[in-house]
Length: 309
Ligand SMILES: C[S@@+](CC[C@H](N)C(=O)[O-])C[C@H]1O[C@@H](n2cnc3c(N)ncnc32)[C@H](O)[C@@H]1O
Image (cartoon, rainbow, N blue to C red; front, side, top):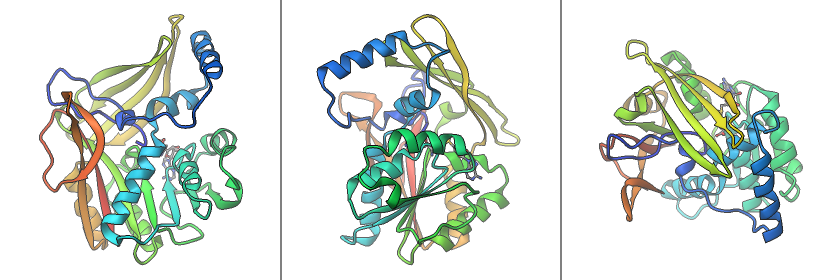
């Protein structure tokens, strides 16, 4: 999650996690020395010298899993046809685009975000290991309610970023723009979370190793307006804290509302995919998302909506 989000949990005392827990897998193998060096660096990290994007990616993004999922979602609708062009909305550091390009030398991608800072950070840190990366990638410093240069086979909006739209009219305008822009057999993938814990005002703390903690702060939820304020903080071994490293002013959208808007703007079909349960711990998600029209009424759940043009 992609992103960020609560983790599936069945019991009421389990705290929601940001979406990291779509099981992160180790990417390129690193030597023992490099690992040791990394650990040393982590132990020296503090609120002053830490890079918030590096920590965000470590805590929140799982680009390998996310790309694997969007390929599966596309296969569900289009069989063996291989998707080649990808659009990542709210792309931030564009970690998913980088993973997409790594997955096939012929694949291309476009990323859309209003903020140049994460885009520049991503160019510098995520694309140096992508062969021919910048040639196959195009960034748009623009609103997601506009189009891109080439019609995507898959468009994704990860880490609940579309919750930035507070008004239904804005969500309608966004989904309409995505539908128009997609290729004729394109597919739109959005993640979502819910369950009673999702709107509980609470902090979820998770270790990133070497004394570094990631804090997902569900600060405030207003049932009357749906306004939902959240933030990410990082705490370090020396006791320092990077408070409000990222802040989100969202509306909490329910799955039913989002699906209704997708159908209303003209998507032909919308399916729901929910995270499975860890066989060793029934309070944990297993990181795998399967087609499931019903879902399970957990305290916190994570899912995807997949909409076909
Ligand atoms: C939660 S971050 C998500 C980053 C990335 N998708 C991820 O999964 O890590 C949300 C991003 O959306 C961007 N953003 C917010 N509103 C936008 C809009 N209307 N159009 C384009 N980008 C927007 C912000 O600049 C920010 O980089």
